[in-house]
Length: 252
Image 1 (cartoon, helix red, strand yellow):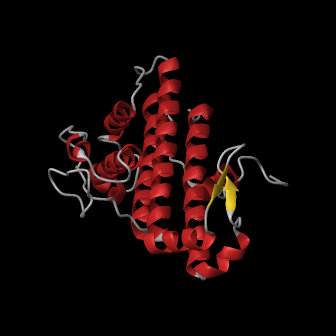
Image 2 (cartoon, rainbow, N blue to C red):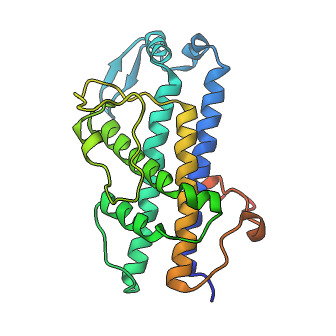
């Protein structure tokens, strides 16, 4: 039978968004690596910037550049990219669940942790992937849950670990729970989360790999389509515009 086109569209949109996010991250990382920070100062607003539509906020651009450089742009960029990666994945899971629930093929899930647990149950025992990918799947699922907890700490606890990072794991007896090496048990909320491009790349691979397995599993289990999605067979390039502009470029 044919693939469900709505499910496929949800998958390809999220897949391209994740790949576009990787491209944006690498572009900005390379640009900042080859640019001397002090060369940025003349191109920034001088003396003040519009904080709101009506208020001006005084600042010194050189001080801002030094603060950014001292903190580490790779660290700041990697945290922001992780937040975006998790958001893209959660949006795709919600749309998958909505589509299947509307077809009365599953129950409706609301919260992000519930959606992730639901998706993990779908892929458990899946045959839609290479032997290596399927053998790694419990760890891959653990990576996604780790990223979710990291995102929550970054957004809700000023970028520091909190108690929920250790306690809010998905415990289903199958997913291999993952932690960052710099996290500790009994975290106090003072220990900052430090990520870099290498770590973001790792999480990006896990999310994209999981998304492919989940999409193929849904198409097989609910729509009886056994042929897995393949970039080469589909003749599909990366649709960068999904992250970079939000609209199709000329000729697409």
